[in-house]
Image (cartoon, rainbow, N blue to C red; front, side, top):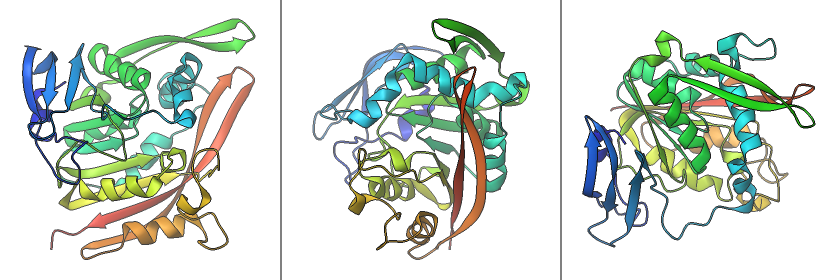
Length: 306
């Protein structure tokens, strides 16, 4: 865990009260804290740093069944392909991550990729602003993302057909090696960061996978600086297996279109405004003959410093 994160961290158990975490019994290599424990002085909750990865998920947090599937090796391969396939110019790849970055415009200060999966957009943000943090509830995802950040390359196998596999490998181009990209395990509905920490918060294809998506929107705005941008992209593929319809953000006869509902929520309150910015197609690979092409609608919200 990069030492720069220490000034931003608060105990997620104690939210909405913000109690800075204290580092104990740690080891480090340069600016990288390789092991140790982050302790809340108020409630006593302890969070481990192991092999440089900080686990900031509240100790009592159970991973919902619908989200636990993201801890499988097959899905890790699918997401690695989805995030990085354009780097080796795979003909099925899309330009979603660069398009989302263009839609975000310019911002000042560090960035937060809330629900980062295997990290591509975090690298895009770090290259643009100098420092970005990716968080995800999936330990395999953030472990892979941090490995890419340290080694600047990755090789992995993905299903080809039946028991056959295909090997893919890539290196981060020079532009994605700029800045500092750090990754931690955390819950996007209880972000372990103090208020007003980030100049840009991204939420890509996350809200329809959460049991309480509104909590994520509240947290995304809480950690925004006085002048900040939020970019939310999602296909709004609501499922009753994930969340109750009354907890969806739109998608029902009573609530209406999800993009409009989210834009209204993100734009509510003094200093905030939000608009539907368009959409972007992205693709995820299951095997050589099966790809899923998905369109995510994009909402961009700005918080004024005034």
